[in-house]
Image (cartoon, rainbow, N blue to C red; front, side, top):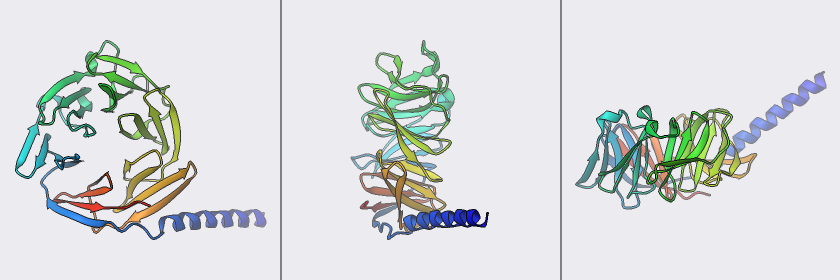
Length: 271
């Protein structure tokens, strides 16, 4: 019995040592690019043209210098999520009203979609822009991922039912990523192929970069993770100046740190 207990203790020690050595490596030292004051409730990100997007008092804004565009829709309640993948066709998701609004580059409404009025019942709890006039939708009624053609008003299921609730999701044109309540990370392509990408550590906030890379925060520290194998992650702490923050946003090697008063932008070179 003593031998067995000692063996277990040694295994635990080796596991903890390995985990600590992974997280306490040389880290990433970002380069400060810019710092600007902001008065917003939510920082949504930047587009490739340098416009900043934010939400203040549930008004969605697009800002660059003195150029300001705004959109608000009081009838749909709170904006749940903003998808900026296509700055010419921005997606605003209003989960409480099971609706999506598509905006053009001047924040004029292109269309408004109420999934409750669809012939096939849809209760959307996740949404994002996909390809070929389609939107990614996670339908909680059947727990399946689907694609909604907003021009034809047609919905098709692409995945099998998910067995665990979604904790976090993120989309690009070709992929629906999600992390379930057990912190398992998956992807689903537009043809319905589901891939297991690994297990994610505990996180407060997270941004998926690709099928093998992501950034996450714990407390007030941000880490970059590269996953070369499903069971082997390497973590690098990104050494930002902020002692606390509300949100971070990452795109094209630019890390934006949002607080209640300002945004700081860093250039980072990932390993």
